[in-house]
Length: 143
Image (cartoon, rainbow, N blue to C red; front, side, top):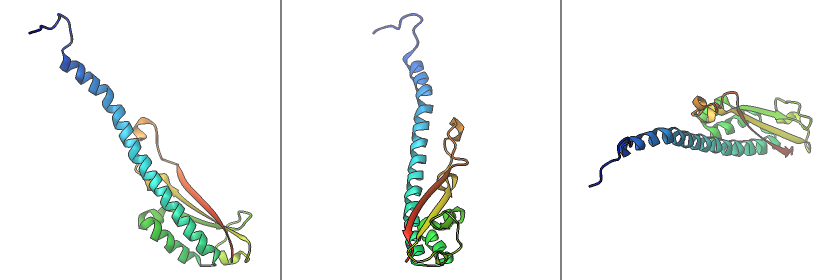
């Protein structure tokens, strides 16, 4: 049987130190992956909602109907925090798509605070979602 050299650190102690060094990095990578996945999923939902709202806005539907589409795509909690902007080709906000003449572009913008889309898991290490906004837009020709 081999004896340990005098002054050598036992193997179990070095494993503990390695685990203490690797565990925080591994935790940040895992939490970052979860947060990124949730943000990408929310962005995909926003693209779908914006596309459908833009299509209906081009057909001249009213704002309450457009807001109900947001609820269908985003759910109650996210749509309550989402901002729906309808604008003409010059970027002037309009209340209803019917205010835009036929044949002219209708711009639809949907904004959602990033903290409503994913939990702020990495704020302890300096990567915060606070004050970040997910925004998508589409442009359709008014019919």
